[in-house]
Picture 1 (cartoon, helix red, strand yellow):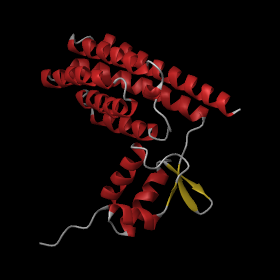
Picture 2 (cartoon, one colour):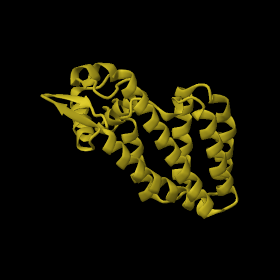
Picture 3 (tube, one colour):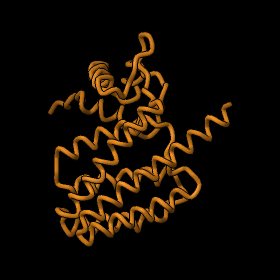
Picture 4 (tube, helix red, strand yellow):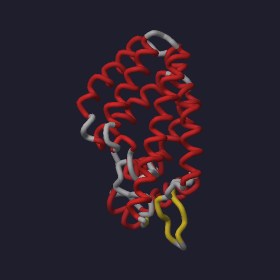
Length: 217
């Protein structure tokens, strides 16, 4: 049987994951030939994937080159506003519609992730997994699609707010509160807890950016 050639979707997912993991960071140039060699695919699906990422504003033009896009202050603020609203809705729907098995998985995640509070990179990956589980537990495919786009755009931030001193422990306590509300089927409480969680994360990131600007000046 002939091997199936990698599709545009495969190439798209591989490039997106590389951005998400920090292999390619904001400002890095993406070259078709280098990407094709790295991922072991032909240049055609790479080219199509790059076009798709540019359409989604995850890549930007720098002359004739494509680079990983970056977010300015206003874009970051706008993104967090949308994220807070959508994440809150996801938690509300999860409290109403999640199965007992899905709720148990969320509880297990919180307990397991408590061991990662001093490892920002690992906690950041676990954090994305936790939020994705809440999205899926909402049982609303259209909401999941929109949140996927929001979280893809979050990858354009060069650092994680979880790297701030003490933020890991605080975030885990916030996750516990969110899951407790979902366990109690408290839709209002879950919505409020997740919105507050995103607001604190945003304030933490603003402080990080202010400190970085001060250090650079």
